[in-house]
Image (cartoon, rainbow, N blue to C red; front, side, top):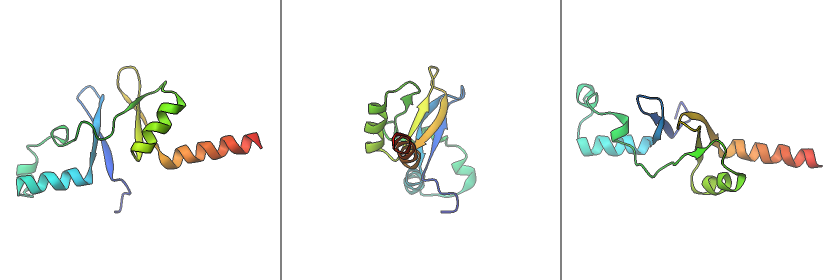
Length: 107
């Protein structure tokens, strides 16, 4: 993979987080449609392809326990604000870096 992403966030017209869509979901969609013709694919919206339970977001004020629990169940955690606008995507790598920095400060 050139870009390094396996999932990307999908936002609605108000720029609120809906869910994340994976490369596998796009492949599954192509299999079901049985065509890769661009004009046909342009009729579909990413929001119609996503699994609604795949990558639930956490609120920006989530506690550390919620973050850890979410990270145990998914590779990344979208973080949203009070209006459900996407603020950041927290990755496992970033969480480990944070924990390592916290440990180093203690020592």
